[in-house]
Image (cartoon, rainbow, N blue to C red; front, side):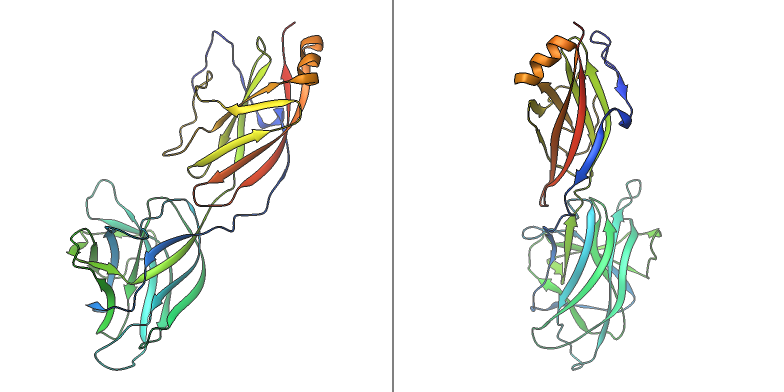
Length: 296
Protein backbone atom coordinates (compact mmCIF):
# COMPACT_ATOMS: atom_id res chain seq x y z
CA UNK A 1 0.00 0.00 0.00
CA UNK A 2 1.46 3.35 -1.04
CA UNK A 3 2.15 6.13 1.46
CA UNK A 4 1.74 9.89 1.03
CA UNK A 5 5.10 11.13 2.33
CA UNK A 6 4.33 14.84 2.29
CA UNK A 7 1.81 14.44 5.10
CA UNK A 8 3.74 11.60 6.73
CA UNK A 9 0.91 9.15 7.07
CA UNK A 10 1.54 6.02 9.05
CA UNK A 11 -0.69 2.96 8.95
CA UNK A 12 -1.10 1.50 12.44
CA UNK A 13 -2.20 -1.93 13.62
CA UNK A 14 -5.69 -2.69 14.91
CA UNK A 15 -4.47 -2.00 18.42
CA UNK A 16 -4.77 1.70 17.63
CA UNK A 17 -8.55 1.54 18.04
CA UNK A 18 -10.96 -0.51 20.10
CA UNK A 19 -13.79 -2.50 18.52
CA UNK A 20 -16.58 -2.40 21.08
CA UNK A 21 -19.56 -4.19 19.56
CA UNK A 22 -21.67 -5.13 16.56
CA UNK A 23 -25.22 -5.67 15.36
CA UNK A 24 -26.88 -9.03 14.62
CA UNK A 25 -26.20 -10.74 11.26
CA UNK A 26 -28.08 -9.70 8.12
CA UNK A 27 -31.65 -10.85 7.51
CA UNK A 28 -32.42 -9.21 4.14
CA UNK A 29 -32.33 -11.53 1.18
CA UNK A 30 -31.62 -11.51 -2.55
CA UNK A 31 -33.50 -13.88 -4.85
CA UNK A 32 -31.42 -15.83 -7.33
CA UNK A 33 -32.89 -17.64 -10.31
CA UNK A 34 -36.47 -18.06 -11.48
CA UNK A 35 -39.09 -20.74 -10.98
CA UNK A 36 -42.26 -21.28 -12.99
CA UNK A 37 -44.66 -24.17 -13.54
CA UNK A 38 -44.33 -23.73 -17.29
CA UNK A 39 -42.34 -26.51 -18.92
CA UNK A 40 -40.37 -26.43 -22.11
CA UNK A 41 -37.15 -28.39 -21.99
CA UNK A 42 -36.81 -31.99 -20.88
CA UNK A 43 -33.54 -32.46 -18.98
CA UNK A 44 -31.95 -35.88 -19.31
CA UNK A 45 -30.21 -37.27 -16.20
CA UNK A 46 -26.46 -37.25 -15.60
CA UNK A 47 -25.76 -33.66 -16.70
CA UNK A 48 -24.61 -30.49 -14.97
CA UNK A 49 -26.63 -27.41 -15.95
CA UNK A 50 -25.72 -23.73 -15.50
CA UNK A 51 -27.63 -20.59 -16.51
CA UNK A 52 -25.03 -18.70 -18.51
CA UNK A 53 -27.15 -15.60 -19.21
CA UNK A 54 -30.62 -14.23 -18.52
CA UNK A 55 -32.33 -11.35 -20.33
CA UNK A 56 -34.61 -10.14 -17.54
CA UNK A 57 -35.88 -10.88 -14.06
CA UNK A 58 -34.00 -12.19 -11.05
CA UNK A 59 -30.35 -12.98 -11.80
CA UNK A 60 -28.72 -16.40 -11.72
CA UNK A 61 -25.27 -14.91 -11.10
CA UNK A 62 -24.48 -14.21 -7.43
CA UNK A 63 -24.14 -10.41 -6.97
CA UNK A 64 -22.81 -10.45 -3.40
CA UNK A 65 -20.67 -12.79 -1.35
CA UNK A 66 -22.83 -14.42 1.29
CA UNK A 67 -24.79 -17.45 2.42
CA UNK A 68 -27.47 -19.39 0.55
CA UNK A 69 -30.20 -20.37 3.02
CA UNK A 70 -32.76 -22.14 0.84
CA UNK A 71 -33.63 -23.22 -2.67
CA UNK A 72 -36.72 -24.37 -4.50
CA UNK A 73 -38.07 -25.59 -7.82
CA UNK A 74 -41.61 -25.71 -9.12
CA UNK A 75 -42.97 -29.25 -9.25
CA UNK A 76 -42.12 -30.60 -12.65
CA UNK A 77 -44.48 -32.23 -15.10
CA UNK A 78 -43.33 -35.45 -16.73
CA UNK A 79 -44.32 -37.55 -19.67
CA UNK A 80 -44.15 -40.69 -17.54
CA UNK A 81 -46.59 -39.71 -14.80
CA UNK A 82 -45.94 -38.71 -11.18
CA UNK A 83 -42.53 -40.33 -10.80
CA UNK A 84 -40.23 -38.84 -8.16
CA UNK A 85 -37.15 -37.11 -9.60
CA UNK A 86 -33.69 -36.40 -8.20
CA UNK A 87 -32.06 -32.97 -8.34
CA UNK A 88 -28.87 -31.50 -6.85
CA UNK A 89 -28.51 -27.75 -6.36
CA UNK A 90 -25.12 -26.54 -7.63
CA UNK A 91 -23.15 -23.33 -7.87
CA UNK A 92 -20.51 -22.97 -10.55
CA UNK A 93 -17.65 -20.51 -10.95
CA UNK A 94 -16.44 -19.51 -14.44
CA UNK A 95 -12.85 -20.52 -15.24
CA UNK A 96 -11.23 -17.34 -16.55
CA UNK A 97 -8.50 -18.91 -18.64
CA UNK A 98 -10.84 -21.37 -20.35
CA UNK A 99 -13.99 -19.94 -21.93
CA UNK A 100 -17.16 -22.01 -21.38
CA UNK A 101 -15.46 -23.97 -18.57
CA UNK A 102 -16.90 -23.94 -15.03
CA UNK A 103 -15.77 -25.11 -11.61
CA UNK A 104 -18.28 -26.61 -9.15
CA UNK A 105 -17.95 -24.74 -5.84
CA UNK A 106 -20.97 -25.70 -3.68
CA UNK A 107 -23.92 -28.10 -3.78
CA UNK A 108 -26.89 -29.52 -1.89
CA UNK A 109 -28.47 -32.86 -2.60
CA UNK A 110 -29.48 -34.90 -4.39
CA UNK A 111 -33.00 -34.09 -3.25
CA UNK A 112 -36.23 -35.89 -4.11
CA UNK A 113 -38.47 -33.61 -6.19
CA UNK A 114 -42.23 -34.05 -5.99
CA UNK A 115 -43.79 -34.06 -9.44
CA UNK A 116 -47.06 -32.73 -10.79
CA UNK A 117 -49.23 -29.76 -9.86
CA UNK A 118 -47.92 -26.30 -8.95
CA UNK A 119 -46.64 -26.91 -5.42
CA UNK A 120 -43.01 -25.88 -4.98
CA UNK A 121 -40.26 -28.01 -3.53
CA UNK A 122 -38.45 -25.95 -0.85
CA UNK A 123 -35.21 -27.03 0.86
CA UNK A 124 -33.20 -25.37 3.64
CA UNK A 125 -29.41 -25.20 3.17
CA UNK A 126 -26.32 -23.44 4.43
CA UNK A 127 -23.87 -22.74 1.60
CA UNK A 128 -21.23 -20.05 1.18
CA UNK A 129 -20.88 -18.51 -2.29
CA UNK A 130 -18.96 -15.61 -3.77
CA UNK A 131 -19.91 -12.80 -6.13
CA UNK A 132 -19.71 -14.11 -9.69
CA UNK A 133 -20.75 -17.69 -8.90
CA UNK A 134 -23.62 -18.98 -11.06
CA UNK A 135 -26.72 -20.94 -10.07
CA UNK A 136 -27.43 -24.31 -11.66
CA UNK A 137 -28.11 -27.97 -10.86
CA UNK A 138 -27.34 -31.61 -11.63
CA UNK A 139 -30.13 -33.86 -12.88
CA UNK A 140 -30.59 -37.33 -11.49
CA UNK A 141 -32.75 -40.23 -12.69
CA UNK A 142 -35.22 -40.89 -14.17
CA UNK A 143 -35.37 -38.98 -17.45
CA UNK A 144 -38.15 -36.94 -18.97
CA UNK A 145 -38.58 -34.11 -16.45
CA UNK A 146 -39.35 -30.54 -17.51
CA UNK A 147 -36.49 -28.59 -15.91
CA UNK A 148 -36.39 -25.32 -17.88
CA UNK A 149 -38.76 -22.44 -18.61
CA UNK A 150 -39.29 -21.75 -22.30
CA UNK A 151 -38.95 -18.04 -23.16
CA UNK A 152 -37.93 -17.99 -26.85
CA UNK A 153 -35.54 -15.16 -25.90
CA UNK A 154 -32.04 -15.51 -27.32
CA UNK A 155 -30.76 -13.63 -24.26
CA UNK A 156 -31.72 -16.57 -22.03
CA UNK A 157 -28.95 -19.13 -22.36
CA UNK A 158 -28.03 -22.19 -20.36
CA UNK A 159 -25.11 -24.58 -20.67
CA UNK A 160 -24.97 -28.33 -20.08
CA UNK A 161 -22.14 -30.78 -19.56
CA UNK A 162 -22.34 -34.58 -19.29
CA UNK A 163 -21.08 -35.69 -15.87
CA UNK A 164 -21.30 -34.67 -12.24
CA UNK A 165 -18.57 -32.23 -11.22
CA UNK A 166 -17.63 -32.47 -7.54
CA UNK A 167 -16.83 -29.34 -5.53
CA UNK A 168 -13.46 -28.03 -6.66
CA UNK A 169 -13.51 -29.83 -10.02
CA UNK A 170 -13.61 -27.92 -13.30
CA UNK A 171 -14.43 -29.03 -16.83
CA UNK A 172 -16.00 -27.91 -20.08
CA UNK A 173 -16.90 -26.63 -22.47
CA UNK A 174 -20.53 -26.39 -21.38
CA UNK A 175 -22.79 -26.57 -24.42
CA UNK A 176 -25.03 -23.60 -25.15
CA UNK A 177 -28.82 -23.54 -25.65
CA UNK A 178 -30.83 -20.33 -26.05
CA UNK A 179 -34.43 -19.55 -25.27
CA UNK A 180 -34.68 -21.17 -21.83
CA UNK A 181 -34.21 -20.40 -18.12
CA UNK A 182 -33.43 -23.14 -15.63
CA UNK A 183 -36.33 -23.77 -13.28
CA UNK A 184 -34.63 -23.13 -9.93
CA UNK A 185 -34.57 -20.37 -7.33
CA UNK A 186 -32.33 -19.74 -4.30
CA UNK A 187 -32.23 -17.26 -1.41
CA UNK A 188 -28.99 -15.39 -0.71
CA UNK A 189 -28.17 -13.42 2.46
CA UNK A 190 -25.41 -10.87 1.62
CA UNK A 191 -22.45 -10.90 4.04
CA UNK A 192 -22.46 -7.73 6.15
CA UNK A 193 -19.50 -8.57 8.34
CA UNK A 194 -16.64 -6.07 8.16
CA UNK A 195 -13.45 -5.27 10.00
CA UNK A 196 -11.06 -2.42 10.55
CA UNK A 197 -7.82 -3.05 8.68
CA UNK A 198 -5.80 0.01 9.68
CA UNK A 199 -5.70 3.63 10.79
CA UNK A 200 -3.59 6.53 9.51
CA UNK A 201 -3.20 9.79 11.43
CA UNK A 202 -2.47 13.23 10.05
CA UNK A 203 -0.86 14.94 13.06
CA UNK A 204 -0.64 18.27 11.26
CA UNK A 205 -4.42 18.41 10.77
CA UNK A 206 -5.39 16.31 13.76
CA UNK A 207 -7.42 13.82 11.71
CA UNK A 208 -7.49 10.06 11.24
CA UNK A 209 -8.38 7.89 8.27
CA UNK A 210 -9.89 4.48 9.07
CA UNK A 211 -9.59 1.73 6.46
CA UNK A 212 -12.01 -1.21 6.41
CA UNK A 213 -12.18 -4.60 4.74
CA UNK A 214 -15.63 -4.97 3.16
CA UNK A 215 -16.91 -8.28 1.71
CA UNK A 216 -19.35 -6.72 -0.77
CA UNK A 217 -20.33 -3.52 -2.55
CA UNK A 218 -22.32 -1.26 -0.26
CA UNK A 219 -22.39 1.92 1.81
CA UNK A 220 -20.07 2.88 4.67
CA UNK A 221 -21.05 5.65 7.11
CA UNK A 222 -19.98 6.87 10.54
CA UNK A 223 -21.09 9.21 13.31
CA UNK A 224 -20.29 10.10 16.92
CA UNK A 225 -20.56 12.78 19.59
CA UNK A 226 -17.90 15.40 19.05
CA UNK A 227 -16.90 13.75 15.78
CA UNK A 228 -17.32 14.59 12.12
CA UNK A 229 -17.11 11.45 9.98
CA UNK A 230 -17.29 11.24 6.20
CA UNK A 231 -16.20 8.94 3.41
CA UNK A 232 -12.57 9.58 2.47
CA UNK A 233 -13.22 9.99 -1.25
CA UNK A 234 -9.58 10.67 -2.12
CA UNK A 235 -7.43 8.85 0.47
CA UNK A 236 -4.01 10.43 0.92
CA UNK A 237 -2.44 7.28 2.31
CA UNK A 238 -3.11 4.71 -0.34
CA UNK A 239 -6.28 2.95 -1.40
CA UNK A 240 -7.86 -0.34 -0.44
CA UNK A 241 -9.34 -1.71 -3.64
CA UNK A 242 -12.62 -3.64 -3.51
CA UNK A 243 -14.13 -4.62 -6.88
CA UNK A 244 -17.40 -2.81 -7.55
CA UNK A 245 -17.46 -1.46 -4.00
CA UNK A 246 -17.96 2.06 -2.72
CA UNK A 247 -15.24 3.84 -0.75
CA UNK A 248 -13.83 1.75 2.09
CA UNK A 249 -12.21 4.52 4.13
CA UNK A 250 -13.63 7.07 6.55
CA UNK A 251 -12.07 10.39 7.52
CA UNK A 252 -12.55 11.29 11.20
CA UNK A 253 -12.31 14.85 12.54
CA UNK A 254 -13.08 16.38 15.95
CA UNK A 255 -15.66 19.12 16.44
CA UNK A 256 -17.02 21.28 19.25
CA UNK A 257 -15.54 20.64 22.70
CA UNK A 258 -13.54 17.69 21.40
CA UNK A 259 -11.87 19.90 18.80
CA UNK A 260 -11.02 22.54 21.40
CA UNK A 261 -9.46 19.88 23.61
CA UNK A 262 -7.45 18.55 20.66
CA UNK A 263 -6.14 22.05 19.88
CA UNK A 264 -5.24 22.64 23.53
CA UNK A 265 -3.68 19.29 24.49
CA UNK A 266 -2.70 17.75 21.16
CA UNK A 267 -4.80 14.62 21.69
CA UNK A 268 -8.39 13.53 22.17
CA UNK A 269 -10.41 10.31 22.19
CA UNK A 270 -13.59 9.93 20.15
CA UNK A 271 -16.29 7.25 20.27
CA UNK A 272 -17.84 6.65 16.86
CA UNK A 273 -20.30 4.19 15.34
CA UNK A 274 -19.47 2.82 11.88
CA UNK A 275 -22.26 1.27 9.82
CA UNK A 276 -21.77 -0.90 6.73
CA UNK A 277 -24.75 -1.80 4.53
CA UNK A 278 -24.08 -4.28 1.70
CA UNK A 279 -26.17 -3.80 -1.43
CA UNK A 280 -29.39 -5.76 -0.96
CA UNK A 281 -28.54 -6.60 2.66
CA UNK A 282 -29.03 -5.33 6.18
CA UNK A 283 -26.81 -2.76 7.92
CA UNK A 284 -24.31 -3.75 10.58
CA UNK A 285 -22.81 -1.32 13.09
CA UNK A 286 -19.59 -1.46 15.08
CA UNK A 287 -18.52 0.97 17.82
CA UNK A 288 -14.95 2.25 17.70
CA UNK A 289 -12.80 4.36 19.98
CA UNK A 290 -10.37 6.49 17.98
CA UNK A 291 -7.52 8.62 19.31
CA UNK A 292 -6.66 11.78 17.37
CA UNK A 293 -3.29 13.45 17.70
CA UNK A 294 -2.14 16.92 16.64
CA UNK A 295 1.14 18.77 16.78
CA UNK A 296 0.71 22.03 18.69
